[in-house]
Image (tube, rainbow, N blue to C red):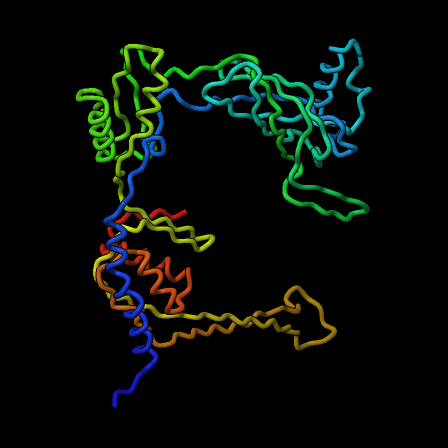
Length: 381
């Protein structure tokens, strides 16, 4: 009769979990789906445009900037002067207003009257923007030109209340949004065709193999010589002679699909203990030996009193002495697995089935990478 041990039972469980899953995982890797070009990249020139401005939020019920913020008082003075109200900065002592910074992204193409969302953040010492309204503010582009006007009630996803030294706060009440709070005043049109009459398709993740596949797929759909890969991130495409058909031409290219190819990656977030790996990230046959070490430190503080009572001097004093006891508990090392060739996902599932913590899984993956058995880039966040 063969005597079973916890180690043998654990290895048997790992074999039952890993070996039957290998054919299914390999079949899934072989059946990779095609991806539309629209999801793999963008055309050069098709991008959002950053806008910025600063303005005043009013109606804050005492939670705005304090009077010592001279910039806020000056902004209020300038605002009121537009309504023929001539007040000095010393005459403005209200805390119902706050100076804010407005940021937004203008879409690649926008017509006059289109609306989009904006972000509002406090610049001074306001406690909360809840209940406030943004006064009409021009939004500038990098060229200092005004492209939109912003105004509207600020929506804050938090609160702050304090009374008699008691404080209750949730999230960040000094930052908020104004849904559809900006209106386009200057039309914007994306320029996709360069001076030479070509379009440039830019990949999100640069890869030479994917770029070649994209060029080949476009040539099959639109004719030989239409596209060629310039580098690992750019595919150059000949534009149509008729500018009126450019939109349909671009739409047809975006709907084409290819199978992307990229380097295998394992992303590790040590703060949250998250491990993300592609299904085709392989691991060579390995044997993992992992041991748990528990270190305990127990410190007790004792008072050391002088032997002579009633005698004072520079060398006679009481001391607090810390006595630390350090204990190390290291159980016998446990063999986690003798793992055949497989994927990172299979290994992580097997380690989890063995009740190995996520932190230890991360350490094991890093050790496997250092041993040369993991053919992937490890990205630690």
